[in-house]
Image (cartoon, rainbow, N blue to C red; front, top):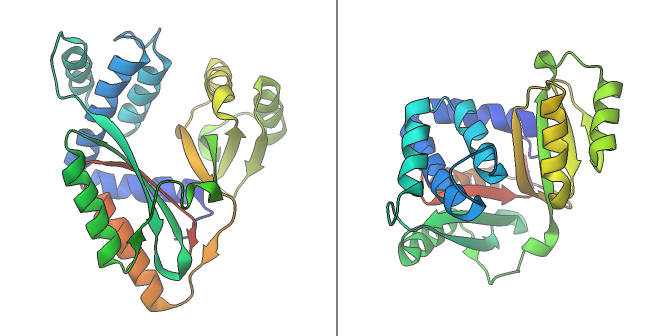
Length: 243
């Protein structure tokens, strides 16, 4: 699994999520709660953050009534759990850099579980900022070629005119990179043009990749990712490993 193939990684994650929907629904439920409280209310038409989470939830086949219940629960006075964000940074085998984004109602529990994942994979948690300088925060939009009727040139011009920074074409997908502040504008322009979007998020893109060639290092690195993937408090993991 290469760190460079964004679309392949999305499909890989979806296959895993299909086998463990309870995990992904828990994650999305937390994101919905935070989006309602921080993004400006329960109406997705006026809350872009919530609209983006709903799009992600539907892509994961989360039932509409489950989405609606989550929104109503988060919008209720004093209802629901108060989740807080926490970000952890550390190192994996061969000096790979890993950033873990979490939403939790118990930071002590989450910190212990994330530390355990690094330890079991031969890595180590570092201080805040120890690896984040190796990444750039960007808006990242992925489009499935098979679902897009627009030509690559027209799609690129549409994205660039809307404010995108970069456009790339892969074997089975298109990827559009934006500044974080322009992500919503570009995303909206694509949707208005009828473009089906596979993934649209603010992410952390590595400036360079570390290629893992030793089988033990690859297995240890994958162990860290697998343990983090099973942790309910973990919302996203960014890394620069390539193998």
